[in-house]
Length: 135
Image (cartoon, rainbow, N blue to C red; front, side):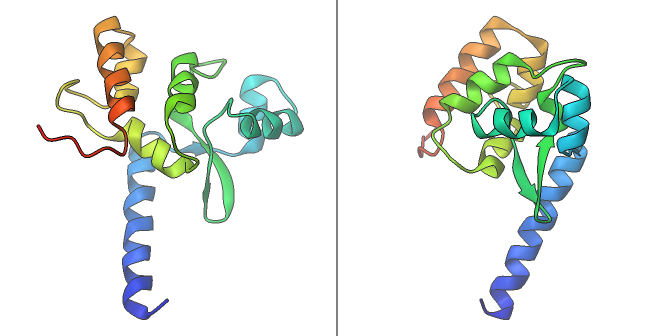
């Protein structure tokens, strides 16, 4: 990778980290284990099975805070994660954190408000994920 590519990659990483921080940050395995009353191996298995959204940040697997309520994973988040046709946790996280004009908010904000009309729009957005759609 040439110096220019490294600089671009670092700017992207910095921007992504800022978006994640503004959305509430991340938990590590131990914090998720404590929240869900599981051991770290169970968290690892749940993550591997797609029951948790995770991605690497600074070479450590982390879990976005916004996918949890006070004692569990928000079911609708994981339902949407399974519908997104992508293996990249970062891309999935960005789906939830990207403002949508039709919703008037981000998908994660809409999910937490639990409005059935917003959920219909989110399902349309999932179908459009990675598809160029003219507006």
